[in-house]
Amino acid sequence: MIGLPEKMNSFLNNRWLVFVASMWVQSCSGIGYLYGSISPVIKSTMGYNQRQIAMLGVAKDIGDAIGFVAGSLCEVAPIWVVLFIGVAQNFFGYGLVWLTVNGTLPELPLWVLCICIFVGTNGETYFNTGALVSGVQNFPKSRGPVVGILKGFAGLSGAILTQVYTMFNFPDQASIIFVVAVGPTIVISALMFIVRPVGGHKQAKQSDGMSFLALYGVCLILAAYLLAVLILQDLVDLNQTILTVLTIGLMILVLLPVAIPITLVFFSPKSEYSTEESLLSEDQRQESTENAKTEVILSEVEDETPNGVESLPADEREKRISHLQARLVQAAADGAVKVKKKKGPRRGEDFTLMQALVKADFLLMFFSLVLASGSGLTIIDNLGQMCESLGYKNPHIFVSMISIWNFLGRVGGGYFSELVVRKYAYPRPVAMAAVQVLMACSLFYYAMAGPGAIYVVSVVMGSCYGAHWAVVPSAASELFGLKSFGALYNFLTLASPAGSLIFSGVIASGIYDYEAKKQSTRTNHTLTDGEALTCYGTICYSTTCGILSGLCLIAFMLSMTVVYRTKRVYTQLYGNQRT
Image (cartoon, rainbow, N blue to C red; front, side, top):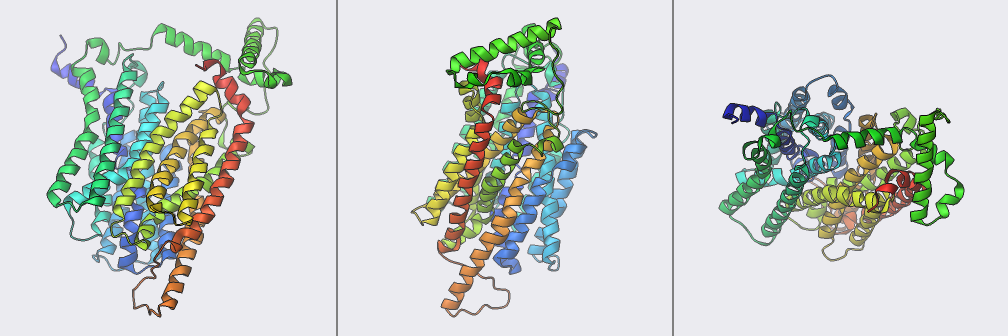
């Protein structure tokens, strides 16, 4: 009979508890997605024009993308140190912004606020890195579901923090910045010693599949609940009591996944919760060893495959490639052939960042991200102004809506792209191309001033932007390996702020201010001291959306080029796993 102290020790060291705690960290770490709610407050209070607001948005995007320090720190320091640095940056960065906006501090220059927002948002990279590193190390055989769920909760955090803000009924709009500064600080400070690697390879269980399935169910229920709450708030004027009850319901759903580790530890047989006895089966270890041996000469198959094989039917092509691979394995084992040493790695093998930067596939993926993900981030950053230009008084609803669909896009993008590669052995970047077409269509619809365009853009751009960040990490790891995955991924994340720097900081803000000046001149309106230029109507962003639509189509063509170039690699990786 296992005593309560032993069970508590097992519970505190259970990888599912760590994973759930990582989900809670992520649920308040996507603070960058709240910029659409923060920017109108800063604009009205500080009297900034749209170009100045766009510069603050670019500072936020750069802070969100530079994660090299956090990634390197994880290799030499405990996870709690990484999380603590993120907490300090978030608290001081956004805390200074809040004190400036509410008048406690004297008005700071624009460049100082840019630094504050950069520092505060950069704390998010420490939260993401700590949660993802511990999750992948604790679930080495389930990286896809773990990364998808954690990144999804990061996308959902904007909606969660917005609901918390509405529950407390703060007296002024600037308090949304206070929530951003204090909320993540409280939550992550309470969890920083729980989120850590706990020997996940010793806790692999047959029940993991059911646990992940239950977790996916909770994710879908949470997204549906949030969406229903937002629609209700948009259609009905709810009193404060109902808002509080709805937010408490949301908190219960967020806390619900802790039932998984509780059930596994306290209500399962010893073999289900023991951290030392729940090891991988012998068959699984043997299969892993055999796969590793086969992968050593995977690139030889690409060299030795006759050109005519590509034109054969799929089944026959797979048989030929499998037969050739088996011959090479046997020949290498017998010493009849020697596996050639390449001057550099081939696609599917481990690349360093410098090696990847000279490969066309990596550059094509990067510039496709610059165009498409940069366009998505431009819409997210300007959503508050887009709503105000259309006459909506509460942009928080749309910011939360795009956050929810961002969450669903990340979870769904990873799930469906996995189906594409495993069922059809087709290149994963085709999922990128598909969502880029959807982005182009939704942006063109807004440019044409279609009915309900702001809802269409919120749903499509949120989900498609999120899908990019579920598909791209997996595709990068498949094509360029896992050895330098952190450096490769962090470089790819620079694509969003690089695109936003031009699309939002130059194009969107320039067109907005131009249209606002035209309207001001037409109405003979003279700006008073501190009054910001304001544009009204779909014309404020229709031209911008038309331009972004064209850029997404170019991104689609770049992604399809990657698809064409990597067909053989994915056939080799997944051809024998098709169902």
